[in-house]
Image (cartoon, rainbow, N blue to C red; front, side, top):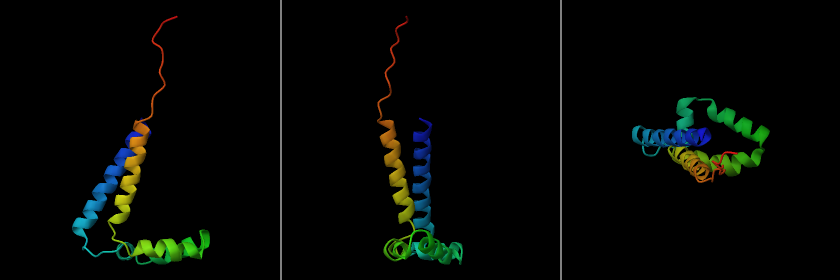
Length: 102
């Protein structure tokens, strides 16, 4: 119950962040540009971390295509995942307990 509510709140925060980024950022602001505006060294640290921990193929095949996407797309994707997890937890059947007294 608590995890479901936390996931729903995280989804709402992600959707609000995506709307704020899309509204207040320029329409063509990519994720790489947003990271550079936020912190000038963020892309260099992200590059070194991904190549060191996950390998150079990760930067080339996963991170570079993600960096050219719109900045609001990442929070929307996270919000969709959190919403799906929250809904799947809410559809679980609870254990049925008998109300009979012994």
